[in-house]
Structure formats: structure tokens, C-alpha cells
Length: 219
Image 1 (cartoon, helix red, strand yellow):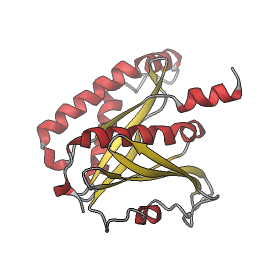
Image 2 (image 1 turned 120 degrees about the horizontal axis):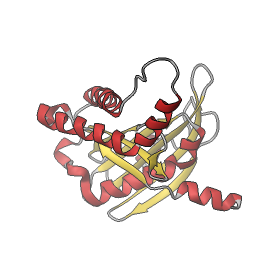
Image 3 (image 1 turned 120 degrees about the vertical axis):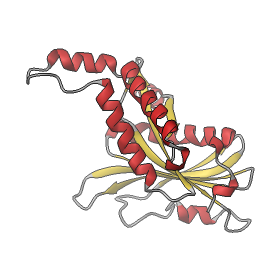
Image 4 (image 1 turned 135 degrees about the vertical axis):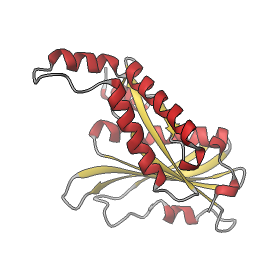
């Protein structure tokens, strides 16, 4: 396979995105979602866990779909609880040969009432001109999906300790008149290769379905 074909295969990976239930959704909804996440890990990561268990030599194998799913759900719900009312937490992953490629990537989605008729201010919102922590100039992509037009930024950033990460900030104006901002950070090279396409897939879903969020929740 050529380098171009390899890159195309990477960027064409379908992402799986879900929204974490907010605290005001009630305990029953969160319990149902936690059970769903446990089932998700059992189905999609079971082969990886089985392989790891077979090679484990340090006593009883400590990982199961039950404890990984439950702990992941708790961490994601705690993060969701920190967000303001106009924001939601999503998580995503991708698959290869019917197995998850990595643990959930968190992404914050903000819903805003427009600051005027001109959506140009969103360029500053996503840091199109660069942020202080960026290690190089951001790459700008214009995005047009059914029901919305927007932009997506990818930049390589550096943590205070010098570790590299991928910054993806995106924004779009829905036909309904709501501005949506999406933000995530990834720290693995293989994630950096695909996260832009993954975020665009989520933008398409939000524009098409609205994810049950209305203008009443927008800032």
C-alpha cells in the first residue's frame, strides 16, 4: 500500500461518538449509560483484554470490562459535571478490525447564541491565528456539512513539560441559528492522524440531529 493510500485509510476511519449524560438527566439515566459502557468495553475490547490476560504473569489479572467500563463512565461523568449548562461532554473512539483503537477521547461541545450576524468571530474562538501554546502555525480547514458551515483547526501544541499534543478546535453555525464550538486534545501520534476527520464526523452528526440540545441551553 502506498503512503497516500495509507493516509487515506487512516483518515477514512469511522469514529464512534456518544454524549455523556449530564447530571440533570437523573441517576437512572446515568446508571443505564454506565451499564451500556460496560457492555461496550466487553464487546469491543474483549479480545484485547483476553490477550492481555493470557500474557499476564503478575498474579490475578486485575482488568475486566466491568471495572474498566465502570471507572471510565465515572471519570467521564465527573468531567461532564464540571461543564457549564451550555456545554456537553462527548467521547469518541475509532475501530480497527472490530476492536477499539484507543480508550475514549473526550471532547467538549459548547452551544452559543451568535454574537451578531457575521460568524467571523468564530475564527478567533478556535484560535485560527494560533495560541501561545502552539508549537507551529495551525492548519485551517473549512467545513461544510448538511445543516451547517464552519471551520476546523489542527495545531501541534506543547505542554509546560514539552510534551507534544494535537489541538483540534472547531466551530460551525447551524441553520437553526446556534453557534457550536468543539474542543479536544489528543496525545498520541495515531490519534493526531485521524482526529480531524473524527471531529468533522461529529460536526456532521450534531448538524443533522441536534443531539437533543436546543437554543434554550445556549449561552
